[in-house]
Amino acid sequence: MKNSITRKSFLALSLLGLLSINTMNADHHNEKTALNFKMKNIQDKDVDLNDYKGKVLLMVNVASKCGYTPQYDGLQKLHSQFKDQGFSVIGFPCNNFGAQEPGTHTEILSFCKENYGVTFPMMGKIDVKGDKQAPLYKYLTNHPDHGGDVRWNFEKFLIDKKGNVIGHYKSGTAPNDTDLKAAIKKAIESE
View 1 (cartoon, rainbow, N blue to C red):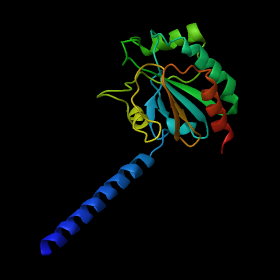
View 2 (cartoon, rainbow, N blue to C red):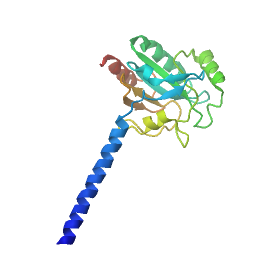
View 3 (tube, rainbow, N blue to C red):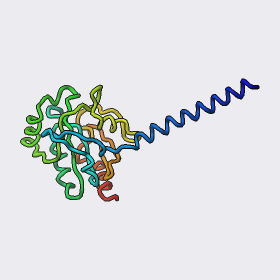
View 4 (cartoon, rainbow, N blue to C red):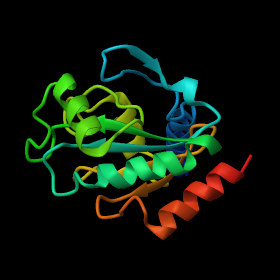
């Protein structure tokens, strides 16, 4: 009898412990938003992403020598179309996939402006996966609802005005995709 009470107590305490750990993990993820990170921009200046609070953002890992590189044109059009309504694309150059972003910051910025007229903010080159994954991308890819590994260049994370991740779109989703644009409009119109 004494042994069965001890076993039941142990199981109950174990279950309670697991629930506490899961709650802590959930709370830990909710402590931050995508805006609670500091980055370096492509000119190597500090950027506090919290400065974007109140704007809807499309965070995109970009590369200059990728089959999806022409999406820069669509991203710029999207940025131009909605920027006056509180929206911004933010580019995050990365060299994680097929070494398709080998350039320096100066070369990347020059390429984007000369070939696609990019005016949206560009951050410094980062890793979006692996051991050196940038903390922002660690947060984005581990999001409970819209996370998942970044599998190639030009994946897109949609961020609402408060910094919540509200969408994750794969590389093949073009910037002019009707579902993506509808999600951006909805986020812009929401409080």
